[in-house]
Image (cartoon, rainbow, N blue to C red; front, side, top):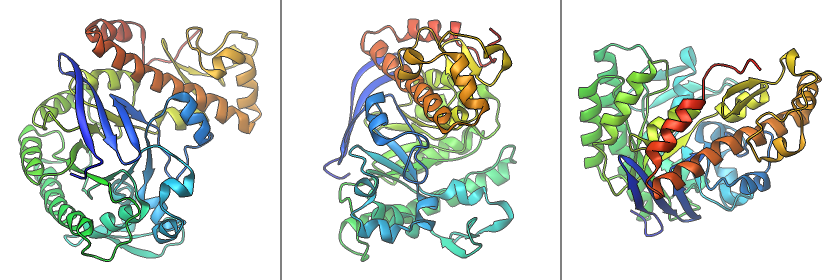
Length: 386
């Protein structure tokens, strides 16, 4: 573990943990949600907006940045933090999920994944070692090992094959990063304090998840992530896998649930011991006119809001809710004004980040159970009808 990286559990309430993750670019109070900045920017908002909203860490995408503008160019610019002028921590995924989603444009083999770029059709090979090298050049504070995500549904045999390949790739990823840290391969890392997370796979099969967790932990990663969920499985199945897997991960390392992001899923996953989250839902849905509120999602394009002078959420104190009506936001959306995406994104990110803040406070005060019950008692996945 690099000297600049660490994790401390400050308070507990049941399985829920209030912690602090230290990185080379500052601390992250957990549980935390990471806004997704796929190409080095969170769509529709600026870094200043993110800081004012209380974001402490953001996620960027290895696959997209390696193709354009290129990880070597970013390294020559001093690394991703300097390139995008973001002062806080950054986590980069390995690019594996994006490659696997290319379908017929990629081929998975033991060496790695050979794929054709979605931009120009050029051929590339992403290996565990190359994923490490790209992230070293980017200089993120947290780098992810390359993994293979089995689809849902998948047979036990297919899930096991993907899990075992993930373990073999994890071993290669770990060896490569340790070699880079020791000055072995000539990779111009822009962040010597970069930590590396291993990823647990195994689909919805308990025995596979157990084996993946135990063997990945034995490799000695700096922390651990749970991958391969939120891919179509029933939500209760996801909760069961999360609870069982989190219980097998070290108490003194952060636990990251990858790609899960409905508000009630965040609360329920914290209750099962998760510390870090990311998801495109708050930003993507904002651009499509959906706002998250304490009572459920609101489709601002709906005609019923054409003359509605209320804010999106009357209990919300974000910039959007303090200044603008549903009627105005609907107007912006229907005329496809760029400001619509910005104001909607500011609201949704505030909703997510403020929910995490309230979760942290509840754990500290020993009232997380009451918070959880109240949140789930009012929040609904059904769209608002009023």
